[in-house]
Length: 150
Image (cartoon, rainbow, N blue to C red):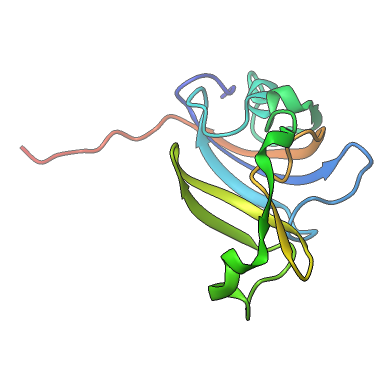
């Protein structure tokens, strides 16, 4: 069965940047199940999946505009370190944090620490990157409808 909108797809992937540097948590492929056409995965990868079948393997490079977008330097801010006093014992570069903003909760990463300042970045970590996916499609099936007893 070929991948088309409304079908459930299970696949494995390894993620790297355009230079081949691993961007995943390990060298072990990650498994994902999603409904094709629902926007559950990034647009560029979902588009590359259309029409493919189980057991198919392929590689696709997804530009930032079809992945996590371009970097927005307005999303990088520097704060006085005192604002993070309650986190002083755990505060470190690379840590992810969540804060409330006027648009709701925002996830950001601490990118730089000095004795007086903390720099945070609310861009997605893959923003501005070309992403290379090595994909193997495992399964394509219709979504089972819930059955009810009458």
